[in-house]
Amino acid sequence: MAKTIQLDVVTPDRLVVAKQVEMVVAPGSEGEFGVLAGHIPFLSTLRSGELRYTAEGRVNYLAVTGGFAEVNFEKVTVLADSAEEAREIDIDRAQKAKERAEERLRLTKSEEADHARAQAALQRALARLKVAEKAKL
Picture 1: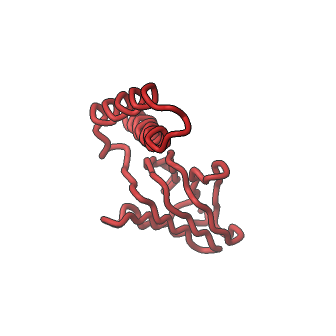
Picture 2: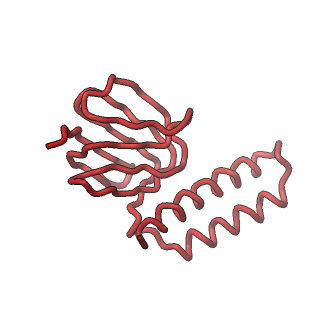
């Protein structure tokens, strides 16, 4: 039997995941990182992206937006601005958000604050679409 580590994914609104898992892979701000039981402790900021974890031999996917991940020997705690399981994502809504963000990017200059917000919105939408596609598999 594989060693497990506790994974807790929490947003300001709810507890999204609380379970023993074999592995966690998260979108760190400096790049994707993986965690197994007994991992050395660290703290990382998160970027918008796909968080995946393996529980009972099955890979599960979440779209996360921002926040932090704290890792210690026995637990991974993710405090995310938002987190959605693949089955919760409305693909049409995410596609429309992507299109709106792309349009805003076309209309703003790269040094404007609106451009940065549009870029962040685009990254959120792309993460949601990527994770939602996994639900179809």
